Length: 359
Image 1 (cartoon, rainbow, N blue to C red):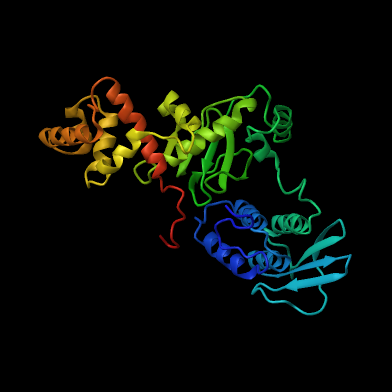
Image 2 (image 1 turned 120 degrees about the vertical axis):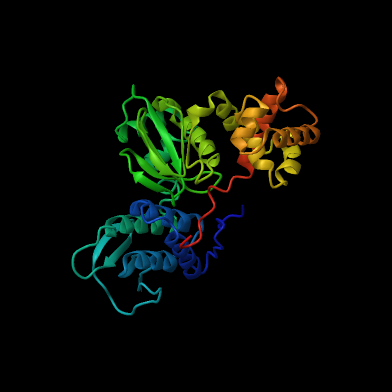
C-alpha cells in the first residue's frame, strides 16, 4: 500500500474530500458503536492518510458541530474551520489544548457536548503528528495496541497491561469486532481501535468467563497478559469465520487447535486443496454442502444438516470427491477437506465489508 493512502482516496494536500468520505463511512456504522471508538477511528484514519491541518480541523468541526481552531507560534498562523469545512475569518476562543507551540480549540456555545473532550484530544494529537512534533512517540502506540502487539517487547506489554488495570496473574480473552458491530450488552474492559492487516478493528479485553452478545465478533482463547497478543490474532481469525446472521460470532475455543493452525498460516501459503474448492463453491449447492460435510459424521447426517434427501447428498459427495481427487469422508480426506474449507472461508470472508447505509 502506498504511503499516505489508506484505501480512502486520500490526497495529502487536500483534506476536505477524504474527510467527508470518511464521515460518510462513519455514518454507516451501527449507532450502538461507541462514539469514542468512532472518533478514535476517524482521526487514526486521517493521520494514516496524512491529511492536512485544514482537513483535520474540518473533521473535528463536522464531528462536534462547532468551529474548530488551530494556532501555531512559529511561524505565526491561525486557522478556523466551520462544520461545513469552510474557513472562518477573525479570531475565536474556546476550550483548548496546547503543546509544543501548537494550540487547537473548539468554539462551543453553551455547555460542552459529551464527545468534545475526546475530539479535542484526538485533534491535538493528529495536529502534532501532522507537524512532526510527535511522530516518533504519540502517533504509534497506545496501551492496548502495545499489549496486543506480539512484536513489542514483553516488558512493554506487561507495563501496558498494568496501566490498563489488568492483573499480571489474571486470565483474559480478547474480542475483535468491526466498528459497525452491534452489541446486545457492552462488556466492561480495556478497549480501543487497533490496526490490523484487515483494517482498524475494535479490540476489547474481557475476563475469561465473560459472556458476549455481539454481531459480528471473534472471541480469542483465554490467556495471561503475556499471551494476549496471540489471543487477539486468534480473535481476528474467529471474526473472519463469522457469517451473520447464521453465525453472528465465533468463539475460538469451538475450533480447538485448528484455529491455531489458521492463525499461524501465512496469507500467501500455497494450498492446492483450497484452490480446488473454487469449482465446488461455484455451484449453487457448493458452500452449503461443504459446510454440512465438514460438520457431519456421515452422508446421512450431512443430508439432514444440508436439508436435502440422502440420495441427493450422495450425488453431491461424489461430485466433491471427483473435483478434489480424494474421498472427503474417508480418514485423512476428512481432515484435508476441513482445513481446506476453513481456509477457503477465510479467503472469501466478507464479514468486514462495511454495510451500506441503511442496509
